[in-house]
Length: 154
Length: 154
DNA sequence: AACTCTAAGTTCGATTTCGAAAGGTTAGCA
DNA sequence: TGCTAACCTTTCGAAATCGAACTTAGAGTT
Image (tube, rainbow over all chains, first blue to last red; front, side):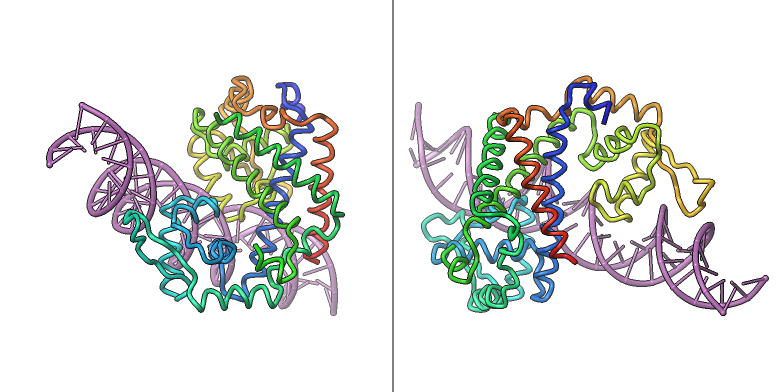
């Protein structure tokens, strides 16, 4: 730690970064446990949830890859398995034949409903310790960090 | 989104979770870019940094696995590669021969110094947009979330 | 001392992920 | 029309990760 500070690093930054990675790790564990019953991985749940949130509108593999933070090639593989299992369906986009449109099948919707209904994946437990204002503060601060990182990127 | 809310999920929770995963993703990209010059992966840097922060005291593979959030078996592989490259050294713990002690070699320390000196990995850029108070708030809120998650776990 | 139970590190096989390259499709423009 | 550039998805090979099983060492008990 002393080496960091001496080199110009700030302890407050370290503290935040450590905490962010800590929360992410815990969150991953929590999701993993909640989804194990349904035979879903986190990545697969992320796809189901993204499609469910999108509602009627279909999403492309690229969009899903962006939304769930993986490379497009990884999404191809993931969708292969989910299609094989009958959770999603690939259909060609007639308007732009470069694209493929992904939608939930009946089974996919059933699985989403079941996960929600059994409240396996209602995330309220996670932030139970924070008040409404504090949640807003937290989200706001994190969003500002994201903005800053976007700016550094450019 | 409507499906979530109807099922008892709260939008504020979704917002926080989305933001946390967003920051983590950006952070990973940022680290990846900074470290590419040095030929280090994030995981390897995490090991170097942990050992550097520990200073004189050696760490065991298990401790490093905990600190860097990977399985012990993954750490074995990582350390193999780093030892092969001459960055770290394994030495038996005479006090407890179950353990192995990991320490940075001269080359490992040089690499750490170089990374810091070239300010490749001084994280201050990341939180430039936040004041000191805000950083403390952010860290505090995240740490409370971690506590809550620990409690749910038990 | 003998036995058991726990802990640490590693090995092994399976899975997941990534990046680079390929193939097909669209859009812009001379 | 023909050419080029960009985009989307997929294929492929390489690398990282995980969980489970295994080996060895230490601690505690009788």
